[in-house]
Each structure stands twice: as C-alpha cells, then as structure tokens.
Length: 165
Image (cartoon, rainbow, N blue to C red; front, side, top):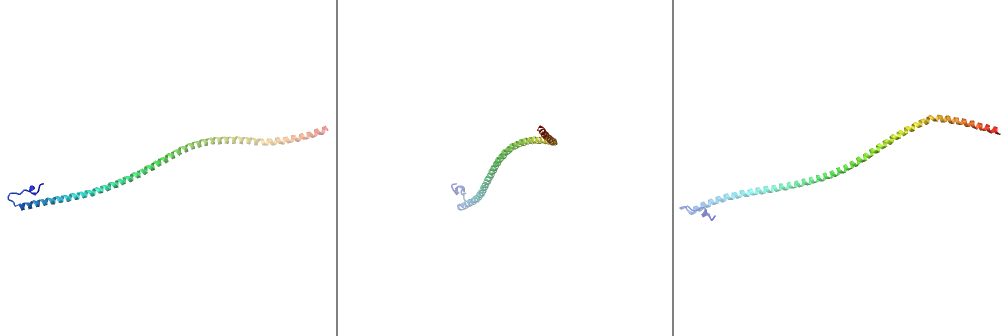
C-alpha cells in the first residue's frame, strides 16, 4: 500500500487528527492481530520442528534397529549355512557308514557260512573219532594176536633152527 491516507481517506468535515488517531488505532489493532498470528505461527513452526526432530530420532532409531536386525539375520544365515555344510558332511559320512555296514554285513554272512562249514567239518571229525574209538579195541586185539603170532613165529624159528643143526 501507498500509505495510511490511501487506505483510510478523510471524510468531509472530520477532524484530521481524530481521523489519523482512528486510523492509527485500527492499524495498531491489525498489527496486534498480525503479531499474535505471527507468534502463533512461530509456535506452530517450533512445535513442528520439535516433532520433526523427534521423527528424525525415531527414524534413526528405526534404522539402527533394522541394521541390528539385518546383522542378526546375517548371523543366522551364516549359522544356517554352516549347519547345512555340517549336515552335508554328516550325510556323506552316513553314506560311507552305510557302505561300510553293507560290506561288514556281507563279511558277516561269509563268516557265518565259514562257521557253518567248520561246524559241519567238526561233526564229520567227531564221527570219524567215534569210529576210530570203536576200532581201538579191535586194534588192541589185533596187536595182541600179532604178539602171539610173533611169539609163535619166534618159537617156530627156534625149533626150525634146532632141527636144522
């Protein structure tokens, strides 16, 4: 605006000082309203600045928490990866153990067959021993007869020798 007079022109027949005072009062009152509005706006700005700072703190805390969670998840993933590696190793060992167990089972079956054969052989040997035990008295009898025959033979040899002399 170009001044007070341009906004509040004098009315014909009025006192110029009174008119200026009224214009000044009106202007002061508008100034008071504008200053009150300014203070209210500054208060709102301060309030918004405080809220903004709090939101920024919350955002930073949230970011830190997410960063910690991310690190925690990365740790879990590393542990999971190690566990998977260990499980793979254990699985490989189980496969090897199964193969060895199968070989041992086959060896055990062969050993069982050999044991069965040995038991059969032992049975045959016992049978032969029993037959030999049955022939032992016959052998003793035959030895006794042989001794008698040898004695008679010796006696006959002596008699023959004395007859030929």
